[in-house]
Length: 484
Image 1 (cartoon, rainbow, N blue to C red):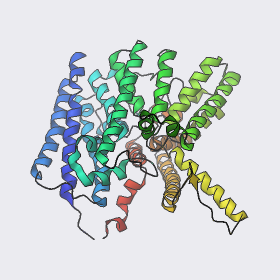
Image 2: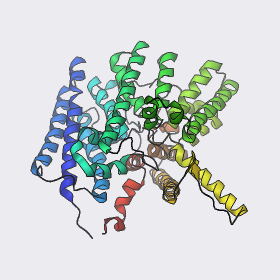
Image 3: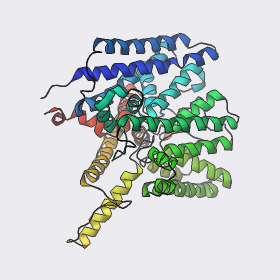
Image 4: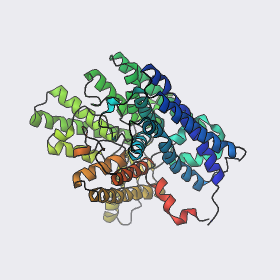
């Protein structure tokens, strides 16, 4: 076994904890403005988090953190989500509003991984500062903690590249610039612009700045936390359509926006993944809308808006809701369940398997059939005119196999805790895909509060596993990965 370079790992974690402490402190003005009930817990948590990071960094500040290899990169990417979630849970726990640390941790890792699964039975009972921090965890985690660190801390150097590959979603990572730090800053620039634009549009619909800020954090990050008990239900159709648009944009590959900003709209949005992504949402929405009109007596506009919102929220793994799909006809909500396995585009903030992997899987199956028909033919899987290498195809097949196996094992564990099979399956696929609402008691109007600690820790692990797309976390448990 070769030695692990632990000092650069600790140094990066220390720096990121300081960043988290500063982000946490931005909740203080909101706490003061809305009465300061949660001021002490937020301020103390921010100080503890920043101080912990500062101490770690100070003790090894002279160490060259650029000496980070693949193993250190994967270890940092996995550990930082766990550690930041632990410190991020402090405001909830110290304030007493979530008195059980398991619940506080579940809520926080659900935020950072942009899952949106909640244990809160009365969201509006929490002070506004805590709810702001809850929504901000979405926004921090949406584009990725490591991508954020690389964007604002270019001193990470070569090590940043190793971590970038481990965290960014998708079967093939696309760089917008030869330098990883520049790519990270461009991605965050697009992310920030979409957030700002959504806040403005929501406020034009007479939503308060505070609520517009929290909902924009949740939509652009594909997270789904709302400061309201009823999510988006009580808002106007205008607000709901704005949220639909930005959920759709959040589920789109962010590099396409950069390409479009250079004036090349045709190149940006003519790719097969974008077309399949848009077509999937539209066809599923129209089909469910038809069911709601015929079977549930919905009006045409209401049926279209309700189905489009729910389908977009599910495909992009956001988790906002304007309707309880568990009250729809059974085959309508079953379609929603199947969509939980789709995911948005690679390079987006959406979770799930990703559209491009489904495309590659079906193309690979089609190629296998053609090889049976024409054994001597030389065939390749091609997407947008580009031949996909065996490495990518093997990666896609591996993801699908691991995803199904993990889904099955997770469902069995939750069933063993006392949940019925549909609830277990819905909860597992929802948390793995970063969606939030599951089925039955964990559905759109339910929550995860009634689950026992074993179920909550299992789902917390699945949230992280899904956010890191399985390989980046599973690889740490392989002995061969740690050998020379």
